[in-house]
Amino acid sequence: MIWETIRLALRSVRRNALRSFLTLLGIVIGVAAVIAMLTIGSGTTQKVKADISKLGSNLLVVRSGRFNGPRSSDTVARPLEEKDAEALSRQLSGARAIAPAAQKQVRAVFGTESLVTGVTGTESAFLEARDWTLASGRVFSESETRSGAGVCLIGETVRQQFFGAGDPVGEAIRVNQMSCQVIGLLEAKGYTGFGQDQDNVVLMPLHAFQRRIAGNRNVDNIYVAADEATPTSILLPRVEGILRDARRVPPDGENDFDIRDMTQIADTMASATATMTGMLGAVAGVSLLVGGIGIMNIMLVSVTERTREIGIRLAIGAHERHILIQFLVEATVLSLLGGIIGILLGLSLAGLAAVTMSIPFAPSPAVILLAVGFSALIGMVFGFFPALRGARLDPIEALRHE
Amino acid sequence: MSGAPLINFDKVWKTYGEGEARVNALAGVDLAIPRGQFVAIMGPSGSGKSTAMNIVGCLDTPTAGTYSFMGVDAGRLDRGRRATLRNLHIGFVFQGYNLLPRTTAVENVELPLIYRGVAHTERRQLAMQALAEVGLIGREHHTPAELSGGQQQRVAIARAIVSRPTLLVADEPTGNLDTARSHEIMDLLTRLNQDLGLTIVMVTHEPDIAAYAGRTVRFLDGHVASDARTAEAAL
Image 1 (cartoon, one colour):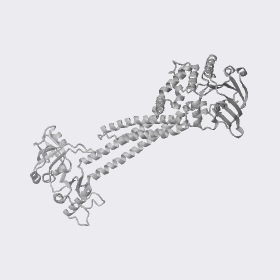
Image 2: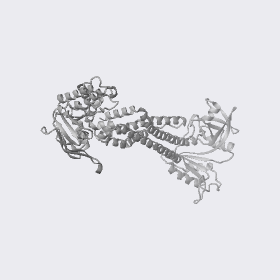
Image 3: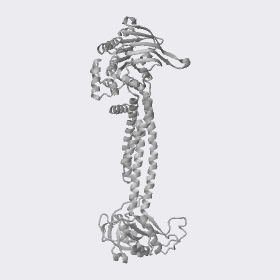
């Protein structure tokens, strides 16, 4: 019986192919919009999370000065110093890696090629803190770090600019007049979501950087990576306490440094993206509603058009529920068909967006199931009133209908 | 139940409208039709014959009085029960054939069986058998648009008899057909009445069509004006 009804519904949809298609279009566009929005949205969220975790997972970043608050500009911030990092290394428990770092954009030269690159003076622990590995070569030795030797690690972008696909290890490049021997190549990290090339970098020992490039003893950041067992939220107050001590901040004084929890930032940004996705999805959902009204409209037309048919069916013994089910199934088949086409269209759009915006293609089975269920529901809800109208017809009146 | 007539009108009234506009379509009709009879119902328009036919076919209910079908007080049944009654016991043939458009002959004939819940293969078999009885084998996959008027009416008759009903209600079955076709259809109905013992109640305007029936009931102003046993009375 139900198969019979579905076959009947499919036939009726096929018979009025153009009209059915136009009716479907509302649902197709609605479902496609919802699917595309949610899929692109969750891809973006994943991308944002991945980007931030590329900076290093479970990472705290200490920076000098106060970055928040209205009075941040009226106190001259005291820069971080190497001894602050040393204090952390001595006293802090629960950290996997601690690395001071100072940065500057300078021009690097090799032969006739040159490139403006981000030079960072730091220690080998920096790689560990930032979850960065070497593609080839080695990290700084103990004595190179201490003495500030002219050695460096370069990123993939720098390698390509200077050496093409060749091996850079053992070559000497010039960074801001300073000759520097390449001892290792960093694994490529790619671009961040904000379009920043993370591979256009040169790392050198902190002391070499301070002496030859910065010309001061400042440290810009201290990176502290938490170990497996310690959440950053627990590590953060410990770092704060040690630094206040080391920098002799009076008990009632404000911190003259700033600690950022990258995990927290990642979560915040991901949830902001998710909220945005939800809002766009809701807007797309409104078009689904409009599609549903289109279905209702066409079902009313269909019932009126087929009044005589309903009369015949009622006369030969169809019950109200038979007629009701017939039109309900027809409306559901119609909107389900629209839903399926909409899903395919939505996924294609999301796939296209994933390729052009270089975000991951993240279709969610839950969202697809929801779309299928929702479009079927729309058919039933908006098909119910017209179907009931058909079922309640008086067979005598219906048979007289021209 | 065998003693009671198949169809029994006991002081049946049917009233339409309210107040000034009140019209009595039927005004206390008494009529009994036993099983196996072939009855023609005649009368001018507005005489109440269509209303009577709708009540006979359990499509409508009386305003007052009792209409019993197969000993059941059909006038007091709800919509659903009357639908079941129609599906199991009553076949309909209309003037305008009333076949489903763009649906093949055999599918049209199968329709009453669908609502009875008969499985697909058995349904097809019964429908083909009914089409054979009306002489339409070879045309079963034609749609109504591909069939002549006489053939369409044969499909309609096949649809009416496919569920082996007790009663066939025919509303001007030859009204849209030429003389030759009309007589073919009447021969078919007569044969069904005699061979299957099918009770037939038929509305018609034409005396020569009514002559096929064994009994003619004339309506006038909501009353039974005459009720004659033989075909001669039709004239």
